[in-house]
Image (cartoon, rainbow, N blue to C red; front, side, top):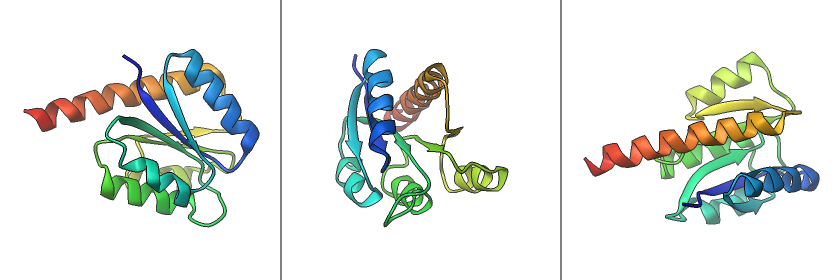
Length: 130
């Protein structure tokens, strides 16, 4: 079964790389270049995982994570950032992010993070069903 992953990043090249890696892994990929434009995808009932940058014009990744966690606590969010610090990682996890990757990353790291987030999503769905 194809899983749906939303990639939110203002860098076009990184969007393309993440899309390629995730599509090659068998996922359906939705792309948005800002937190604001990504909000339209957040209510998609087929959405399984969200990948987002921290630093973007307009709504930043921190605010986007909080909004996603509030609106869709059943969809894991993974932070992918070039500006990673221990403090921002801790804050992101506290705000509801499921994982945190720093750029540059290996394709395998991205695949593993998404795979783990999908497993978490499945557990959350099963708990809600029960």
